[in-house]
Image 1 (cartoon, helix red, strand yellow):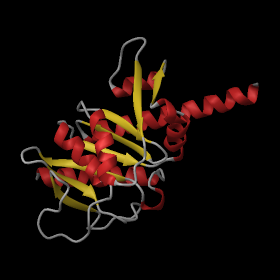
Image 2 (image 1 turned 90 degrees about the vertical axis):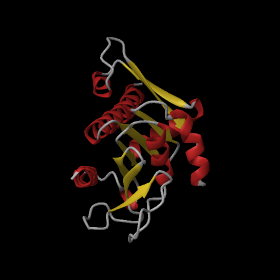
Image 3 (image 1 turned 60 degrees about the horizontal axis):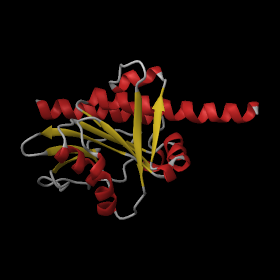
Image 4 (image 1 turned 135 degrees about the horizontal axis):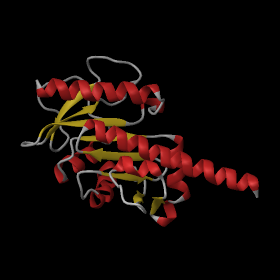
Length: 206
């Protein structure tokens, strides 16, 4: 029963994010934990059009990202990022999407290695309720070799909630539940779009 609930949660998130066009060119991948000991999770199958719904949208993998049992399809290319999340934290869901906003932000601030946001009400959605709350998102290089990318990603996976931008690639967000992971992803995308819009407005004024 728990496995099917997790499956349905991930399917619903896929449908919602696909409706926002956050999976251009079959990009992006989603994962949800199905077991803590041993670590097992569902992850989107590689090369699927995520706007469509089929019985083969997800595959079930172990703590190393390998298929469990006989299954059709293969795990998404960036499954090793989710492997790091589920092995290093108690997070229940990990989401990775490529959008124009998060790619542009990652390029603008990539040389700095991070971007920090403050003074935004939406930061409360990330669990920061203090008056002058700030949130910082690290930005790592986009290594074509996935094990190398996972090794660069891993040091930033230190809590049950978090986010990492991969330069000119996309963002990975994780949280204790699927609901929270989606909420955090939406909040970060809002912050990215707000920042780009504000910069554009300031340039047009001057």
